[in-house]
Length: 91
Image (cartoon, rainbow, N blue to C red; front, side, top):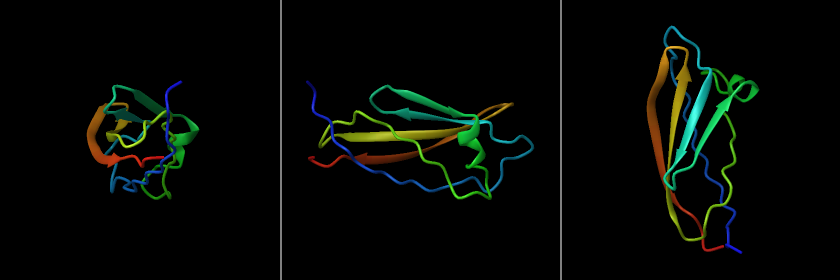
């Protein structure tokens, strides 16, 4: 059975503006190849005047470096990503 670690990463950055099209989702890409798309009710809390969004990415291995890329999705396409790199704890 693989060993996983519980780590918390907090990246707080909401867009200053969403242009002419509201944000309808976010795409989170993990350096291990996984992708999570956040849509619907979860996106409502992440509009520019709100307090932020929480998304749990499980099954992270201990003492492993990861890069998370987050890009906003609008009706006109995907915006540029914001990246954060972290290394999980030993457990």
